[in-house]
Structures are given as structure tokens and as C-alpha cells.
Amino acid sequence: MKTLFVPLLLASLFASASAFALTASDRYGSPAAPAFTGRTIVIDSHTSYVNVQHGETVTIRAGADSISWNFDGIGSAFDLAQIMPAAMTAQPVKVYVAPAVLN
Image (tube, helix red, strand yellow):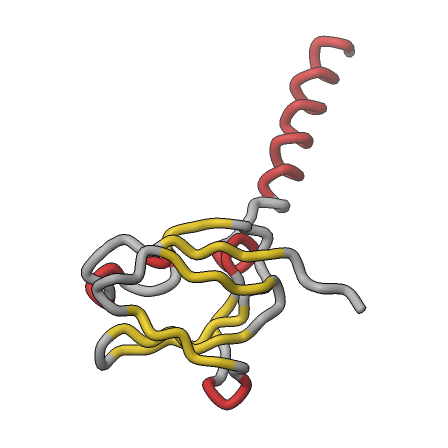
């Protein structure tokens, strides 16, 4: 009975762990409607990073392209290319997400 118990226990642990896998939205946040953005960040040839706050919704504009995003994921720093296709930015841009300010 013991020889059957251990493999079954391990199988159930692995199965339950996969149910908690993080998605891209968990890590980086999610797309938002442009009407709900608080500000616009313009990416140009001199931009190497942007700062946002957790829970903030912004529009990011690079040339003629733009994306509106709600930064409510768990990531505190990541490449903008994770949420905005690399073709939209000529150089790598880092996104830094500060903790939300609690009132």
C-alpha cells in the first residue's frame, strides 16, 4: 500500500501546482480601455525606462502605436516588450512598477 501511496501523493501535488501557474496577466497586468487611463507615457529614442505605480492605468505611446495597460500584476520590473510588441519600440525599455500608495 505504501508503494502506491507515494506516487499518488506526488501526482496529486503536481496536478494541483499546475492549477496555480501564473499567467501573463498575473505577472504584468492587463489591457485597459483608453478611456480609463490616468496619463500617457510617450516612448521616444531616448527612453530607456518608465515608472508606474501598481494599480495605475496608463497609455503608452511609441510612434503611431499605443497600448493602454492596467499595471496590477505581481511584477515589479519587466521589459516593455512583454506587453507591447518589440516592433513598436526601437530600443529595449524597462518598466518599473512601484508599490501602490495606501491612504
